[in-house]
Image (cartoon, rainbow over all chains, first blue to last red; front, side):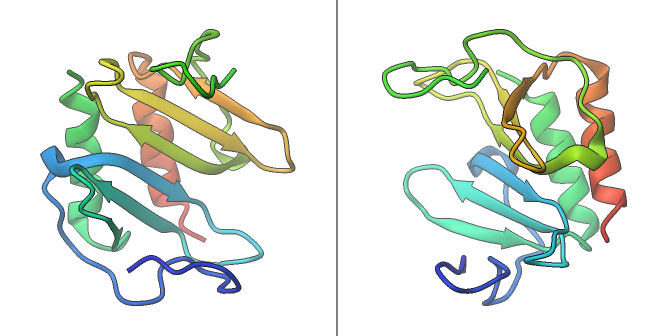
Length: 73
Length: 73
């Protein structure tokens, strides 16, 4: 679900609204820029389960980030 | 301020407590893992100004993330 190479935006093939916070290894937030006007949130899953684009409009996105911030260890 | 290669944790040389949200191009949150027990937050600044490790314990870190989530365009 994460695009590469020439694409300006990274999230080209659909967004998910939900990812289990405990499954998240890494979360990347790309702010709006000249190359892509949308904010993009890319989540890398644990155990090599790949990447997902998280819908920044979904209320879940904020909650996920808050949860990650809390479960520090 | 961001370590590479053999280092297990990425943030080796000190953390900052504050970064201007508008200066942030990309924000990466690495959750706690076997290779690094701490949560790490790495901020890439606009205009090639490099990367900073943001202190996850700082109340500012959460606020920054919230602000980024709001200023979507």
